[in-house]
Image (tube, rainbow, N blue to C red; front, top):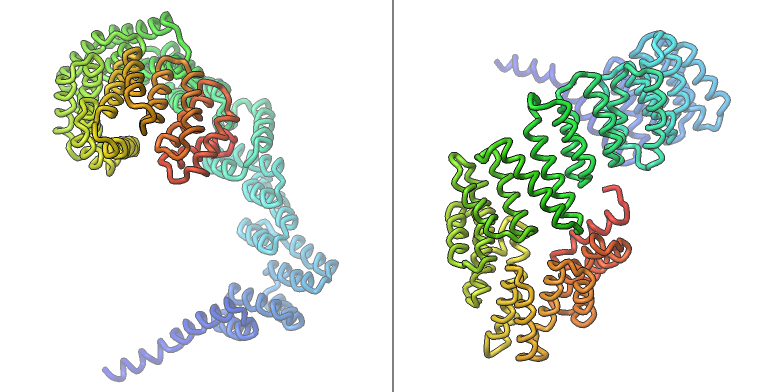
Length: 600
């Protein structure tokens, strides 16, 4: 047994020694001790059956210490022993280049090209050797010559595209990616990834678009080019033209509308509602009821029309009635059941907040939450909205009952947090500030950023204004005005705020009164007056807790309703610079960059 272990140790000793040499050489190389590293790499090269990796490292070390003669002799010896390894000519040329012998170096590079054979692996290795030395023109020559030798000029098109990218020759890069795609359509997603990564300007996408038009005219049967053109328009957020390509492909390839539907979803998400509506309507009319996307297209088309109207900040009652009728028609076609429950909820929202028909909204949701086998989540969200509508009618007991049901069902879930927040706000409206503030403190840790921020704001607001006075009447008047605003009873809300200012002049709530007035004017769509309220807060109360809220609200008004993006940018910038600790700082920076046109 001892003899066996002794023999085993003797057998493994060279391997152990080799491993140590490899680590030592690497350490010397990394530390810049190239003289020492060259000796070990040369030994490793001879030990490992003339391994090319170690030879190249050996040469690098010699060049680093300018031992040019030794490097030349090593390469010459290798060429004598292995004349078929044409990459050695590249190594030789590099040694001559380092000595500023450009003509002699060129001669060696040309020798490598002349000796190139029709071996795809050898062609790739030689091009890689040139690329490693940043000899991109020679690498390009290698692939072009290799394509001729292999009698397939497009074989190395993808590699050529990469080389032209490294030369920053965008037209040639695009041309070769398209050459590759023409013969290898399965590479479409890979090429899209490369183009998305490296086309960083509008000019680059325009070049791609121009070349694609030429390709499509020359090869109308090559559908991969049409797909890529659709993708280009999507990158440019030109959904109208993207849809034109998607519809053409859908018809030519006899597809089921899936491509058009996916594009519609993308356009909807980007709020290009016109393109989304056109896409959905194509599926509805061209594919018909037999399409698997028919119901979804009908539903999403309806939502796109609604969003286009209500997010446009300018609409008439006839337009709202037209949308209302579209919802009714949808429900007549598909029935009122668990499948259409979300549509019923949207119609109720339209009735309550835009058509001011609370009774109809309540009736719709009262029916929806009792649909057989209804989704519990949809049902619970319906209860929250129904609670809001009851609160708007002044039926507080009904509202709190519905909120409590959802809170109990989703105690540790975001939906439960939403219900608890609404109940806490009800206590605030009713003047039970201490209980409300305790609930807001708990909700500051909510997983919902919106709830957490709102809870934090209200908690701080109550603490700031309750502890300063011997009476809670000012805060009660403000909370009552808040409730009246929620109920769309604006005249009464203004009256409450006027009472507060009359009874308690120069109160700490003065900035909050301005803020409340601004919110009311916003709901009344008097955006100019709303903006003036926010401006007064920013000017007169820059240190108060409403200042960053007012800045953000004003920025949104300027961006969306008042049409002054430059002013909106300045306001967003002010938030993340002067109010960096604000809960709006991150969102303000994002909005600023979007308005500036950054590619996010």
